[in-house]
Image (cartoon, rainbow, N blue to C red):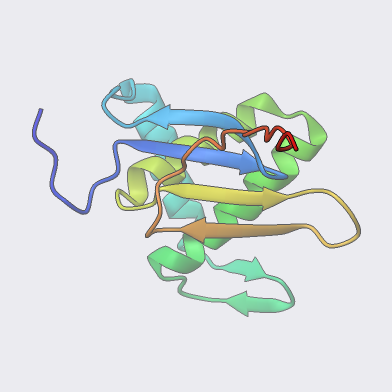
Length: 132
């Protein structure tokens, strides 16, 4: 399967520095799930709230930020259904999105959309002291 250069095959959701979910875009969504994502878009057509700001006609990036914040809340609250729908929305609507980095630890929660860097697993390397 040849993908356009700007299309990421995998969307990785990273929570507090650890991979939480990898979404493979090569797996097609069933019709009822695509319909649900379309309903999400129609609902957002009515406007969204980002932080303290009301956005009457959100652009695709504003919609993604809104959905990423709902994904963060879903993970925090253990709402798997909303989490799955939010992840599917981000993967299907933003084909060049590689990662969603969510921070739940501490007082400030945050969601960051990463378009230019695929997730790579970190490898711990142990060093042995030099012998004299």
